[in-house]
Each structure stands twice: as C-alpha cells, then as structure tokens.
Amino acid sequence: MCCSDSKKCICALGHSIRESKCSSDDAPPFVGPSHSCSRGERCAGGSACVRGVCACEADHRAEEGYCRPIEAPNADVTLAGGNGLRFKSKIATQRPRSTPCDPSRCKLPDCFCTPSGRLPPSGLLPSQTPQFVILTFDDAVNGRTLPDYKRLFGTNRFKYATFPPRNWHNRLSTLHRNPNGCPIKGTFFVSHEWTNYDGVQWIEDGGHELASNSITHVSLEGSSTSRWLSEMDGQRRIMAKFGNSREEAITGMRAPQLAAGGDHMFEMMLRAGFIYDNSIPANGGKGSEPFWPQTMDYRPSFPCNDRPCPTRSYPGVWEIPLNQFYGRFLPQIGAHQRSSMMRAAVPLNASVDELYQMLRHNLARSLDSNRAPLVLTLNADYLQLNEENSGMQALERFLESISHEPNVFVVTLKQLVDWMREPLPIERSREHPALRCPLGFARYSAGKEQCAKPNKCIYRTPGMGSPEHQFLTCSPCPDSYPWVTNPTGNP
Ligand SMILES: [Zn+2]
Image 1: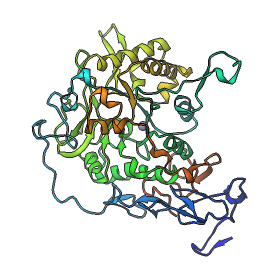
Image 2: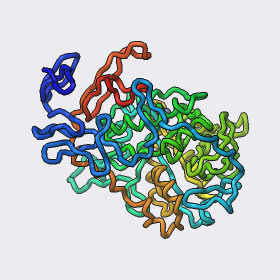
Image 3: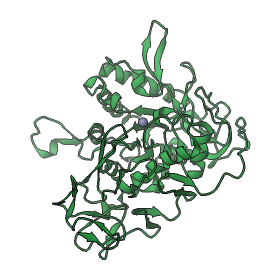
Image 4: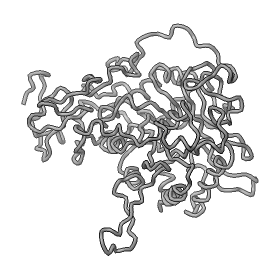
C-alpha cells in the first residue's frame, strides 16, 4: 500500500518487510515517536504510548526517528546527510599545550590529577578508599556474547542448593551484590557491525552502562576529528535509536583496537560531550603501584607509550588508563606476560584455577597498595577461552570471592567517574549517590516492556566486506543499513 506522507510503498499495519515482501507479524509492529499507537503498536525510539500517540518525555523531542534530549551533550553536532556527523562550528583557536599536573590549581569536582598519578583523590588514604573493580566488555553484542552477559547479570540467575531441586525454595539467588546491597553492574563498549540491538536494549534495561566502541570497529589511527566524531558519536546515536537507549547517558568511549587517537580524539570528545575515555595503556612496572584516572586538563602522569599522544589541555575530560593485566609468569624472560586486554595476557591452555589466581593477583596489586581501580578488559575470546568458558568460570569465582570483601565495589566506569568527582571515605561511600542502585533504567519502561519479538532488518551491502548485513531491533527497521556516513539509516 502507499503511504501518503512519504509517497512510498509501505506494508499494511501488522505486516513488515521480510525478503522484500510484506508478511504478517504475530506481534504488533514497532513505531517511532509521533506515530499512532492506538491499535496496540509498540512505541520505539525511547517513546511511550500516551493517549494513542507515541510520545517522547518532556525533556526530549522526536528527531531522526527517536527521542533525542533537548539539552544534548552533542548539541554542536549535526548530521550532514550522507557524510556522517560534523561539528556545526569551527574550532576558534588551538587549545593550550598541556603542562605537568599542578595540584594547587586542579580541583575537584572538575579537575583531578596528582604528580605521581598514583594517589587516590581528595587526599584519601588508601585504607579509607573503596576498591573499585570494573567489568568492561568490548565489541558487538550478539548471539556469541549475549548469553555470557545474561549468565553473569541475569535476574533469574539461580543456583540450586541441591540438584535436582527438591522444592522451589531451595534455590539461592547468586546475583552478585556490592557492600551496599546493590546488584553489580558492567560497562559495555559496543561496536555496531553484527550487533543486535534487542541485546543492547537488554543491557540498558538492566541498568548497565552503554559506551561507544565505534561503528566499523577498525582502527582509527591517524583519523581526523570528523572521522572520530562520525564513528563514536554515530554509534551513540545508533544505540539510542535501535537499542531504545538514552543518548545522553552514553558518555564514555574506548577506541577500536585500543588505538587511541591523541589530540584528534580528545578534541572530538570534549566537543561531542564524551566524559571519559578508557583506551590508553599504562604500565608502571611490576613492582610499582597502578595508576589512578585523571582529567586531561593536565598532561597524563602516566607515560604515554603509544603514539599519537595528546599534547593539549582538555578540561574536564577523564582518562581512565588501562593498567596492564599481569598474566602467567614466564621464567624464560623472568617476567609476567602482560597486556591491556586480559585475553592477550593469558595463555590459551590456562586452567580455571590459574585464571582465578591471576584475577586475585591483579586485584591484590591495587587492594594492598594504592587502591587504584581495577578495570577488567573482558571480551568473548577471554570469557570463552579454550572453548570451555574457562574465563567465565574464573570470573564467576572471582566475583563470588570479592562479594565477601567489605571494601570492594563492582561498578561501571561512569559510576567510578561520578565517585571520583566527589570522593567519600569507605564508610560513607555506601551511601554515595554514585553508588546507589540505579533507578534510571525504569525510565522508558512503558515503551520497552516487550522486546521478545524483535524485527530482523536485512540489507544488501555490496562492497562492505560482507554482501549482506542484518541486525535485530525492537524499533522499526530503517531504510538503509546504518553506517558511518548514515548512522540513523535514512533513505
Ligand atoms: Zn572493540
């Protein structure tokens, strides 16, 4: 049938395009904001059905087919049709060169550094400082990775006291909790290609943190500020539109392939409203303490070993360094295998017990010294190590072991930054607003309640490496495959 508004052929209500034909849906269709929901259509793009129309919240407006924040952190960014994202204004003057940390001028909550890079904020003694552990996950969210995420964080995560269970009451919840009783949360750096957005929606609904890992997932080494913008802010918009996520809540990024982009990357972050980066490796040496995060007002206190290194000052942008993970001791070189990505620091044949000991050993490096946050860089290759889920088993054992430690909190990177902006000693941290159980995920619940039957969106993509691309989403399928030049999938 013909849609009079867009003068295009569309499928009748209750039908969607499958293999170029309109076929009937069992479930009512997803529609974007401003569309009618009077016949049971499911509101998408962050909207909810209000008096028969899919409506955005008061501080949001319908734009590009989803609800965008009116006061967006990336308000200076515009979609240049077919050319990806661009800044509306030019950079007026070059930013000043960064200088070594000056603690007398760098004050919280907006600025933080120490000359050594190794001290907790606000002069807290390590013994007064909570030990933060952050579970970060990298790459596409799909059938390869989502089952692991559900196993770790699923709310129906029960272990039976006896098996088979004698009665229903024998089940014990094994959901891991922090010392203040809140369930632990993770940070997910999502890249676009091969990601299913019903999975992204599941992550957001669970109160976890979504962050950007680019659209293409190829190294952006040597890329311009515009390219960084199209990749990182573009992925934020894709997650908001197709994962029904809150665009303004996506404030972190990790460079694809951990190839950080120096000044071009930080310039983009500052202007597009990214609050932190988590890409730069740091290695203080085995015998010394790991590094704390800092803001980029001042030159990083940890050595930059991978070019390009940032040379200018970026006020208020946090760098959370990746302290290298120490793996197996190699007697032939008299040192530990180590890497920013955990997978690269552990041998393929490592046993669950050995992997668990490595996790404890890396935690002890922080917990018994300066309490620098322990960022675990998890990906499918680590969790599914040796095709036996060895990494996953070790991680679960590790989480179980730290759940008995009164000073260890498992938080998201965003929570870590919020705590660092206003740090409190341990005994008061249990009530810290940043560490309270997240409530925000219930925000769009009216529009999100059912994502059981997502749309499968299929596209011919000649010249893209794979001739066909597809993804699942609980939003309407866009006209074209979302990509760097066209993140919202406009016709
Ligand atoms: Zn990645």
